[in-house]
Every structure is written in C-alpha cells, then in structure tokens.
Image (cartoon, rainbow over all chains, first blue to last red; front, side, top):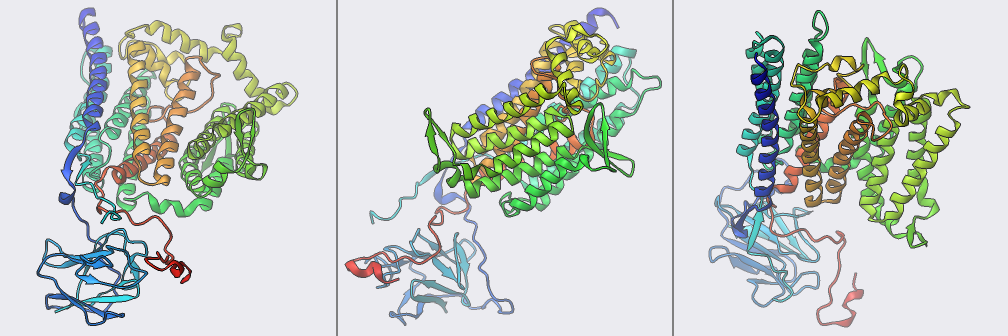
Amino acid sequence: MSELVVTLLKVLFLALLWVFILSAASVIRTDLFGRTVQASELPQQLEQPHRPRGRRRAKQTPRAVEVTNGNKQGLRADLFSGPVLIGRSSDCAILLDDDYVSTRHARIDADSSGGYYVEDLGSTNGTYVNGQRITAPTTITLVDSVRIGRTVLKLVS
Amino acid sequence: MALLSEVPSVVMVHRKRRNVELVMILFAQAVGLGAYALIHLNQSARLPDELPVVAGLWFGLGLVAHLVVRLRLPYADPLLLPCVLLLNGLGLAMIHRIDLINEPPTSGATQQLMWTALGVALLVLTALVLRDHRPLIRFTYTLGLAGIALLLLPLLPVIGTSQFGARIWITVAGFSFQPAEVAKVVLAIAFSSYLVEKRDVLALAGWRVLGLDLPRARDLGPILLVWLASLLVLVYQRDLGTSLLFFGLFVMMLYVSTERPGWAVLGTAMFALGAGAAVLLADRVGQLAHVSVRIDSWLHPFDDIDQNGQIIAAQFGLAWGGLLGTGLGLGRPGLTPLARSDFIAAAVGEELGMAGLMAVITVYGIVVARGLRTALAAKDQFGTLLATGLSFVLALQVFIIIGGVTRLLPLTGLTTPFMSQGGSSMIANWVIVALLLVISHQTRKPAATRLEPSPDAEETQVIGRDRAGAGGRR
C-alpha cells in the first residue's frame, strides 16, 4: 500500500477512536436528564405476601374490608367506592382508636388486575400481612390477614 | 393532613437506553475489528483469511453480553459494556499484532479471546444469579478472610511460583493463575460491607490533632491488619504494585465511608513509612533488592542499559510513536520484553501514538466515571461503597501500570485491565464490570414503591396523641 493510504488509514482509525469517545460523551449528556413521569404511572410492583403453603387462593371476589379482631371488631368498609383509608384521622373509612396506629396508616385499593393490595402510608409502627411487616404495596386476598396496631383486618366477600 | 409526608407527583426516572448501548457496542467492536484488519492490511496489504470467523466470534460475544443485560439488567448503565469491549478489542488486536512478530506466529490472541469469552460467561452468570448486589453484604468476614488468603496464596511452598522476580503466581495442574486479581474483587466486597457496618464508630469516635480528626487507637485494628498484609505482599512477594493496590483500596474506602481526611492522611503516611523503610533496608535485606532496582530504573533508567532494557525500549517506542503513532502493525513493539502483558500501553503508544494512548486512557476514565456516577446515585450505602471501591481499584490499577510504563511512577508489574494478556486479570475485571452493571441496574431502575419503608427499627413505638403518659406504655 502507498504511504498516503497508510497515513490516511492511520488518521482515520484515530479519528474513529475519538468519535467513539465523543459519542460516549453525548450519551452521558443525554443520560443526565431522564424522563419525568407522573408518580402514579410508575410500575407498582406488588409484593406477594408470605402465605402459609397449602392454602388456596379464595375464588370469590372481595367486596369489603372487615375488622376481625380488635376493639372495632365488626366494622366494615365497602371496597367498591374507592380506596379504603385506615388510620386515626376522621377522614378514614376505617377509623381506629389505637395509639399504635398512625393518623393515616395504610390504604387498601384495587390493583390493575382486579385484585386488591394494601399499602403502608409511612406509618410509625408498620403494617403486617400474615405477620410479616410490608415494605412495599402487597397483594392481599380473602385468606390474608392484615394487622395494623392491635387491629386485624380481612377482606370479606 | 400536614403530618402526611407529601409524595412528589412528578418524578424523574432513567431511561433504559438499551438501544443506545447496542449501537455503542457495535461501534466499539467495529473499532476492535478495524484494528485487527488494519494490522494485516498494513503488514501484508491484504485482509486476513480468518476475518469472517474472528468477526463472527467477536460480535457474537458482544451480542450475548448485550442480550443478557437487556433481559436481566434492563436499567444498567449503557456505557460500561461498550467501553470495556473497546478496550478488550484493542487489547486483543495488539496481542495478535505482537503474536505476528514471532515466526511462526504464536497464538496468544486466541487464548486471550477464550479468556474474554470466559469473562463474558462470568458476566452472564453474575447477571443471572445475582440480580441484586445487596445479598453480598452478608459475607463480610468470609470474603475478607478469603481475600487475604488469596492474596497470600503465592507464598505457599508448592503451588506458589515466582516469575520475573515477583512471587505472585500459583501453578495448579499446569495452569498458572494470579490470585491477587481475584482477591481485589473479593476484598472490595468485604471492605464495603465491613465499612457499612462500622462506619459510625470509625467516623465519629476519635481525637483532633492539628486540625485533623484522627481515629481512636482501638479502631486501628482493621487498617493495621490490611497494612500488615500489604507489607507482607511487598516484602515476600516483592510486588509493590499489588501491595499499593490493596492498601490504596482500603484507605480510599475508609475515607469515602467516613468522610474523614484523617484516615486518608494516616493511611498514606503508613504506606509511605512501610515502603520507605522497605526501600531503606533493601540493601541489607536480600528479599527487597527487587524493589530498590525498580526505584533505580525509575529515576535513572539510562544509567544501566542492561538492567533497564525493558523500560528504555518502551521509552524509545513511545518517542518513535510520537503524536499519531507509526500506524498499526508498522512499529516494533516486539523490542520491548513483555510488550503483550505489562507493557501493552507502550505498544499502543508506539503504534497509535499519543492520540491513541490518550483515547485509551480516556475510555478507562469513562468506565471509572460511570462507576463513580453509579456510586453517587446508589440508594444503599453498600452499593455506594462497592461501586466506589470497584471503580477505584480499576482506576488505581490503570494509573499504576500506565504511570509505570510512561515513567511517571516506579514500574510495578500490574496488568492493564482488559488489555494485557492474562486470564486471571481478564476474568476478574469482567466480574468487576458485571458487579457495576448490577449495582447500576438497581440504582437506575424506577423505585417500585412510592413510599420508602420507615427507616426506624421494627420495634413498636407509641406516639402519644392526647395523653402525656402514653409514651410510657410500651
């Protein structure tokens, strides 16, 4: 090959190396600004609760939340009229008079697939599903029990 | 209502950027393949016969790595893989180029390609098995002991072997291996989990001397242990590079986790003291002659041409390369002993010139910068420390070896990550990249929940509402 071609190829290769670095730099630049999305659009990964093995998932659809144990035993809240808020605040559908319960403690709402999940709203003492403290929204069915403070709630059909 | 912590309605999430990654990977691999083709064009004016096979294998490796990341770690950093593949490709091309000097040509590049494939396989394995780095925090002491054991393994009588004056190899069943390369990954994990656990006591207790916060004497245990281990490596393995790498890693991680310059100052002083004493004693203790030779050939290489032939040849090569290099395949990197391993930076500098060597260093810089960026953004302290440690160990290694080759520092035998010939280094560095990808995936993926679990302990607390005495009812 002629001297000229060799030099041209040499310079071309070095240019290619630096073009790689420049494109890497532009990837870094565009990477600084992610996409902004509505928080509600974020995928809500629902955690599966620790459920003792052998119990089948109940077939009926839940209609309400009921307090099954605690000083408000028997109190029910309808699930079809939107999210059910649980706490000490007066705007909660299930109002619990308990020192271990935060003002707005937890929420039970429908998920996209027709089931229901419970979400802790940053409470002090936590929300427990089948005895395990939840750290993320967790799907619940008729067999699961949700403990908030000294109160146990269940979905009922 | 005011008590309710407000959840922001608009949040920023990272894009997945897998297509950008794919384009950059193809670009990087094309550069590597281009180097390979160019070497043959320049040397024999025709393309190599094996080009289609090599191209198939090479792009296949990149695609496998990309697909696994796309499926298992979709939010991982988009630049780590392309940059690493660029360095790896250039390294393979350079090793192949040096293979061609021998008559008949040796097969170093083929071996190295196999090691690269093993590295990619380990990346795949890491991505499949370990999607989340957090479980690693449980193995603090196991990994710490394993790391120190690996580090000192070459000192064992039967399996430890000495090459080129440094006893850093083990030979088992005909395969030689550099356990220190694996130890650097293991110890980075161990140090970070240890420091997550102990950072408060290391950061808060202590006394102040001359405006500098110094730690308490009783907290010095771990740093003394690592210091002793690194001195052992220095004295008995005669390897300043490895010794510096590990001690530097530990001191830097201490500094990052505690945010106290006192640790960094103390660590540097301890290492300088240890290494200085070693050098001063070198004349009297035969064990250390190696180190003082290295210092001599750093300061006055041209005084003793027989002893410093390697470093002199590298300097002449770099000088001959100049700004744009001699062109791939047209220099004489074979004149430098070990041009394919320790001195690959000199070979790159000779054939690609300063422009090429700078580009290579910049690509290392990008890898390290992306690692540190991941560390800054990581949601958990363990992730932060681990990403910092892994990026730093890579940066320090590049600095020590390229600094040694260009005579900025005394030369110490470390490998140039992803480029030098050597299997242990190749697979260890691919595992580092795999871990960085895992951490960056965990860091960049949008949070699954809108609410963080409350950070306080699990125990039940009573928040008094209207009764002053309510707090007593526990």
